[in-house]
Amino acid sequence: MVGHITDAPGEVVLKGETPIRATAAQWAEVIAHLAGDVGFDSFVYWPESADAAQLTAWAREVVPAARDLLGKG
Image (cartoon, rainbow, N blue to C red):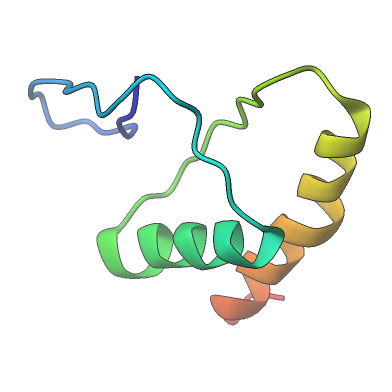
């Protein structure tokens, strides 16, 4: 299910069944856009598989890059 954490009620709409796959830089851009332009203030890390390398890449590459794009690095 794709959606966002919000205090505004509304319908949750499914956007597809396949996982979103992107590079670390692409994920950082998406997160920065959602946080900076759309107003998201929470994100849930939900990997496709329980892979330690994926979590490490998320923590070491995606999060710092998103913070840099938001000027919070």
